[in-house]
Length: 429
Image (cartoon, rainbow, N blue to C red; front, side, top):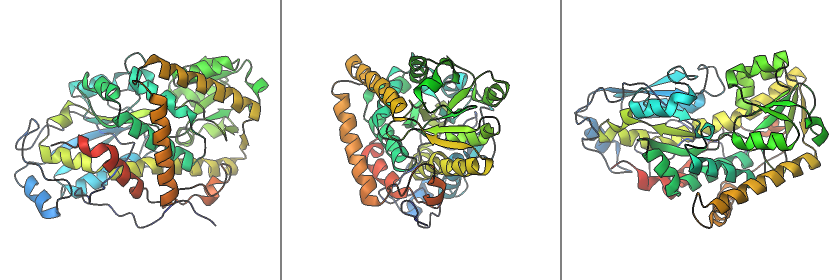
């Protein structure tokens, strides 16, 4: 069968990456232990040059005491389809530091729920975490503006999702307004905006036509989704992801807009047997972020550089989570007899019109400065060219994704380009 993208031996790199170290869009860590050990604490100590050899890194770590960073990720366990976003990063950091720096994974909001997570990072309860700034549009208007601008890209489970994640990180790193929102809270971005996965409709009855949506109760996760669902004649419902299964089972909601890793992790197909997907547009996303708090900032410089330089592993795990889990979920849908159907042209036109209106509102607001639509178009063109040149292209349709996607796909070439293009200038030094 035809497989997707470049596949090669992944192996875990050392944190001393060749000029092109790259990483992951979705990794987190938390707890209050990050600053608990290490000579030259308080962000001191000697670092190493980017691209230095292993001997130089080892020398920078010589006098440092072991330290632990607890990283909170959304996965419920190591068996979750979302686990790679944390596991890949943990492996890379610990190997690069020779075991002196430990990443302790915390699962599924076990330390701080999303509503408290940014405050928990700032006050030291959490060291590093995958967060959801899109849950707080008033607090993070620039981050939410980036999220809204992603809706203009075409949909596909492989190339489309890669483009969205690369575009989100590129635009966010190059938007001072986004970085300032985190700085004001004492937070340091690792991935300032992570597009994660595309959203799909998972419903108890088929809902691929405009008329199907009239009168439905639909679970949503962001303000743009809330507005879209209302425009389609449905009633938006805001409930926690952990409650979605029961809400579908009891009929409290008829549909949920969800990423497929959440669908698999939550077992939604057991109670909702209809999966709808767009082909020419996208449902509004609920973008996340990977942020570091005061605990990480108190670590010695060499440790902070290892955490930063291990981005390649975070990106790899993030794409395994967001893209790989889609293939897993589609295969599961087939096994369970779930209907997997494209949304009608009329419904997609309505979604696209709502997306365009929202994107123009962002441009007119000036939240991300002038000419933001031009910057989005230029970034999208750049990354589309990179995807084509590096071989990350679609080999089939959504419903057959599990047949043509290669789970061994190596995303490092893309993360290399992203790291050099926008991240390297932000490296701790």
